Length: 113
Length: 113
Image 1 (tube, helix red, strand yellow):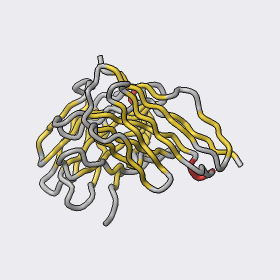
Image 2 (cartoon, rainbow over the protein chains, first blue to last red; image 1 turned 45 degrees about the horizontal axis):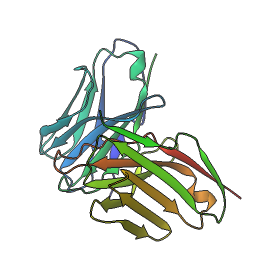
Image 3 (cartoon, rainbow over the protein chains, first blue to last red; image 1 turned 135 degrees about the vertical axis):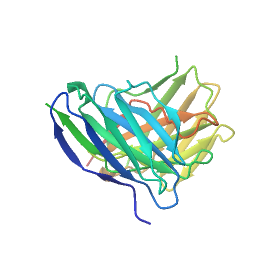
Image 4 (cartoon, rainbow over the protein chains, first blue to last red; image 1 turned 120 degrees about the vertical axis):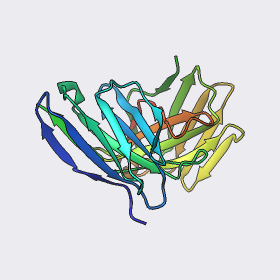
């Protein structure tokens, strides 16, 4: 099975711009979660989508949003970028049931200048 | 508030020795606890899951224990190798609530020749 893929892998944006990141989960996985990782805050949960519905949300401002399509692919959007949004954004997929492990993608490295 | 603590100091050990990493949690009653490995610039990789009614779980050179009284999990790597050098993350979670994972800060392990 192909793993979780994320595009783009690297991105440089300017403050005030917006950005859209994409994630394709493992085939058959219906749950997609997004995480932000920074040296200072570690790995923090952004939100989870399951069958096109947001099932969980972390403590991030409304500038961070996401969606999931019928084929389980997901996108996350960050509007009005701030310098502090520079981070590694990770997407993880799972079959969405029970305590099953999550499979992470390689991440998108976002740099805001 | 819920808190997850892992050894903040990097752990340096000699090849062939057993590495022991600690995960302590407070204000949590997790039903499961997961351990992940993360290499620099890459997404975490699932290693092991242990349930609250399991005292110990093994997989090849890896062993995890879960003490719900002490609110602690220990992660052991026996006969450690330089290739085991990475950051190890724990993520306790309850039942339900979808796939939201809250990770510890991670412990960086370095295995030296």
